[in-house]
Amino acid sequence: MPERKLRRGWTAPFFLVRSFKVRHYQVRMSFFLRLFGLMVLLPSLAHAATLEIPGDGTSVSGIGVISGWKCEAGDITISLNGEAPFPAMYGLPRSDTSAVCGDDDGNNGFFSYWNWGNLGAGDHTVVAYDNGEEFARSTFTVTTPGTGFLRGASKEIIVEDFPNPGDTTVLEWNEGTQHFEIVEFMGSGPIDLGECVEGLRLYPGEMCSGSLLAIDFIVSVNEAGEACIATGLDRLDGCYPDAESLPSTLATAGITATRHADGSWTIDSLPPSS
Ligand SMILES: [Ca+2]
Image (cartoon, rainbow, N blue to C red):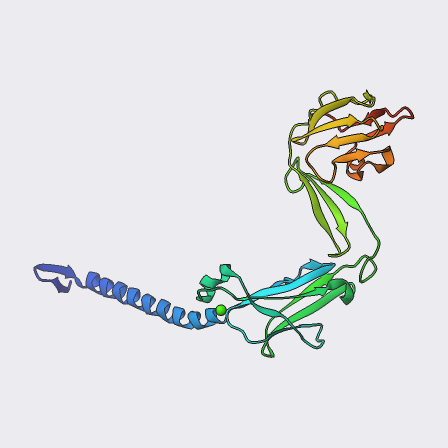
């Protein structure tokens, strides 16, 4: 078997020397390949751009934003379904992009807005341009409540087990945004209604207290015969002259009461205690 001198005082079989050289060559090659890859990648990172909203394949409704970021840009414009482009604001703070863009300020965000309802129900395409050159596009789906802008509607809905099991989230229709917005969030917690049990009749000057979904509450009846609720939640707190004026959130949560002619109130139904 042929032998080569590997190092002074050492001898190694030829195949070992060759294997060492090949490995060394491979390491050097892989380093240069990665360096080359980085050189190709870095300029493309500096021009990286993303149209985040509306994302491709997503569903939107109501008033919405068209937004994303671009490391470097001139005039950013937006076109919907090939119509004449309209301007987007560019240079908004997006510090989360400063690393990928390699700039210090991270002012790479762009933004515009649109009433999706005006596009009508169905699939639509948005294209983003930088100085007239397309750099991003997406196709998205619009759903409308039968009209481009819904007026005069109101609705409050309670969503159970959102976002976590046991949580209660209250949504309310907002005409300005054309969306349901979260107006109350009650995390999971024990239900201990205390003295406020079903069938309890409170006369003016009387009160009861308990806790519901980790919210302590006091119900009292004042001398005017109004039922007064105190929880610390703005949307519930206040004094109510009759059952019809009680916040709708209570009825949706299964809490109902009746006012009697003498100014007293009876708690008719409550959610089950846990
Ligand atoms: Ca930049």
